[in-house]
Structures are given as C-alpha cells and as structure tokens.
Length: 191
Image 1: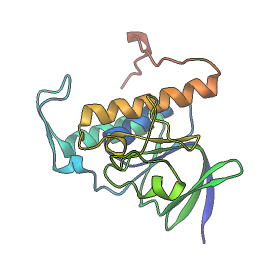
Image 2: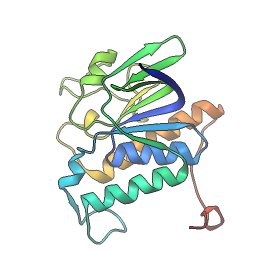
Image 3: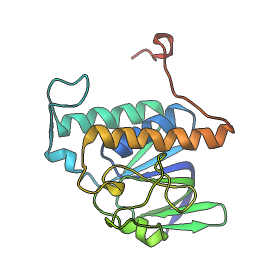
Image 4: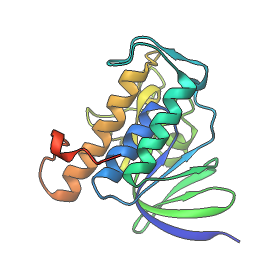
C-alpha cells in the first residue's frame, strides 16, 4: 500500500546536482526529500578539478555530499523514482513503496531524461531537456539539472552549479523576491 507524504521540493537523483539542490533547499527551510539509486556516474569518477578539492574519489565525494544534505535537513531515500506526474497542487513523485507530493521537482538523473519526457518537458534539437538559465523546464515547477540539459558536457562542477541555480530560483519564487544564498562565518553550524 502506497503512503502519501508531503514535501516542498522533491529531488530525483543523487549526484552533484541532486545533492547540491537537496542541501540548498533544506538549509533554507524547504521541506526536502531526495531520491538516489546509488548508481550516480560519480561513483566511478575521481575529482582532481573540483574547486578546493585536491583529490577525492567520487564515492567519497558522494558520501560527504549526502552527509551535508542530511545535516541541513534533507530526507534522503535510496529508492528509484518510478514516475512523476502533475497534480492539482504540484507534483506526485512515486517509488515502488511510497508517493510524495511536492510543490517543485528537481530532476538530476544525468543522461536519463525519461522522467522529463514523461512530464512533457520540451527538448532541444540536441535531444536534451530545454531549460532556462535557472534550470526550469517548460513545465512550471520542474527543473532539469546537469547532464539532462547539456549535450556531452557532463562535469561535476557544472552539475552542482545547476542544482544550486534551480534551488535559488525556487527560493526566489517562494520569497517573492530574488534570493541569494550567501553565508558568512557566523552562519556556519557547529559540528
């Protein structure tokens, strides 16, 4: 039996874009749920060119990023999203076990663009999801990040930036004015 749960933001994908989106949304008091199958291409990567990181395995990067998202308040589920549909109040994100209602959906599924296609998002001539500079698709409230909207430009730093851009747009909509997530040293929580 499926149980319905509520969230402000549902993030589908657990790579750099998805985990960045989950962290930024949760730290800014949006009820955030994220779904990850554990199959991100980052698991096979090694980062030498990520700012402020000299050398780190993709698995270690993902472990740290998951911890950051959870520490900021995101709820992470290791589950495959089987569908995303529009509803009267936003979106319904389905897994085999549960359904989640969300006001916004951030798709961060890399080269797999099936959910965007199922939602009716427009695609470009390069067969990637057509997004604006804030990563919003043609379906209001749905964002596509990283490799979903960039033909052959699969890069962790770009993907993380796309996840942040999507959430800053959502936060701006929620607050009714442009919102900037800028921290100062006194904002840092004690560990």
